[in-house]
Length: 191
Image (cartoon, rainbow, N blue to C red; front, side):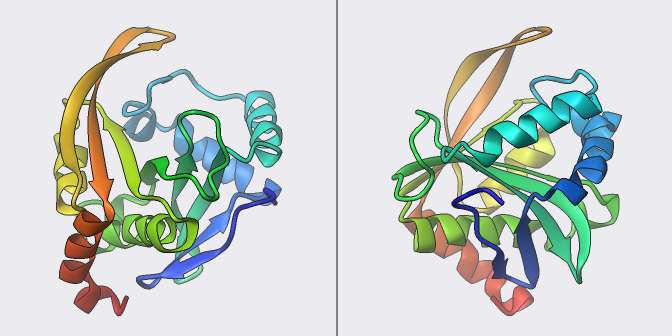
């Protein structure tokens, strides 16, 4: 387990640090066209490349990766990164990433609970003051999703990828925005 990742339980979901036994499922999900289409690097991930990724982040305090579980079933993945390479723990600025692999939960109320749990962990446990998300501007569902979580669109930026430059919408969330959004969802989740 990564030296700093914790099991997160909130809003009726559990976020568990990625373990070796999760890798096959995560690779299957990540290589699916419906998921990879929203990633910066859309190339298929090999078993060897995934193992290198796993080994790298195990000793990297600037990132944490989780499997999202609902009723003990894996339904997606999320992560935290400190954009300047500093440790996640104690950092004021973090970036989050998130996807639901189980299509039954996309567009449902449940889709918000893992993100709320991760955001709560960032603000209340890690001491983060600002969360960032970067979304492709044509991913309207993700833009609306983040706005409902309290994120505000800030700037657009160009990001190099293996397939060329990609424009991303930068979104930002502070603790007040999180608290306001969480209050809307807590009655549904038993927060």
